[in-house]
Amino acid sequence: MNPVLSDLKVFLKFFLKYLRRRVVLFASHFEAFKNLSVDLLMFKRGVFQKRVWHGSMIGLSAFGIVTSGIFGGQTIISSSFPGVGGQDPRFVDTVDPEVIKNDPVLNSLFDTRTQISQKPRAEIIEYEVQTGDTLSGIAGKFDVSTDTIKWANDLTGVAIKPGQILKILPVSGVAHKVVSGDNLESVAKKYFAEQQAIMDFPFNDVPDDFKLKVGQVLIIPDGVPPKAPAPARPRPAPQYLAQGPGSPTFEAPGGGNFIWPTNGGLTQYFSWYHPGIDVANRVGPGVAASDGGTVVVSGWPDNYGFGNRVVLDHGNGYKTTYAHLSNIYVTVGQTVSRGQILGQMGSTGRSTGTHLHLEIRYKGIAVNPLAILK
Image (cartoon, rainbow, N blue to C red):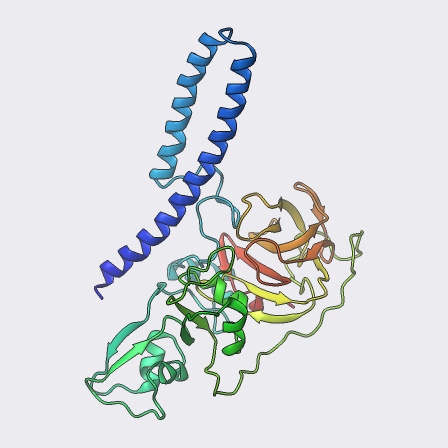
């Protein structure tokens, strides 16, 4: 497919979703305002004629400002924080190599442990094998595993020939066509994958009720076919933290050293579409501040996505986000210390189970938490 047409298709898909959410939100607020106005006018008929006329003009002007923001690509709410405003928090920002080169901190973070995001690819594409191509070389070119190409093309070995057409998935894993009776849990179980990873892949189009459509094709990140052995997933060492709010005896804010905020299994890694890591624990333990800082977001400001979250500004270029919390123990403007409990691990927002989604950003750029946490 022509790259321009492919990019246009992706853009239109996300723009329509974005526009639909905006229209629904506006309609709900407008309906509530209309009902209130009608009740008031019925109570005092004719008294507010001039006021309503003037108010209507003001309302029309306000509507123009809001819609100009919607259709002009601007946002009314600040997009400085993940999950608030027009920026989709699922995508890692495209990083300018010159920015990294000229910033010593970013230069040290973006090494072999941290993947700089590439251009997102939504669909399975076809690639014609060229003279001199190898399976491993093609896999490296498209940043997927060799096994991913073998599984997608029913290859038993690594032998390929010029002119052969290969299906290439957008990420390492497998593709699955939904059949009657499938659900997110059964599909994840079939391919030894995580439900959250399937839902988080931005082009899978999984609705908020998690109901799958028969015939839709899902990309299963890091999935393996049923006949293949289940992959071994490394897990971080358990971190034993206080299990409730309190006044810890750790370092003052902004120390620059980040600790693991909770304990559990590492279920999803940093990637171009998942700008953080997921740590799961069915018990729902406390979630602590990885470093000291000031609370700049506390709650569920957008009623979507990350659910209940806390965002800390550490005052040194770093900000951390702790998402999907069940309970929050801190408020905006509060100063917290490293190790202080911010809330409880939960499953609010777009979540398939109890886990913490952790993001670390430096000067607004998402970096791999595994390169920083100690």
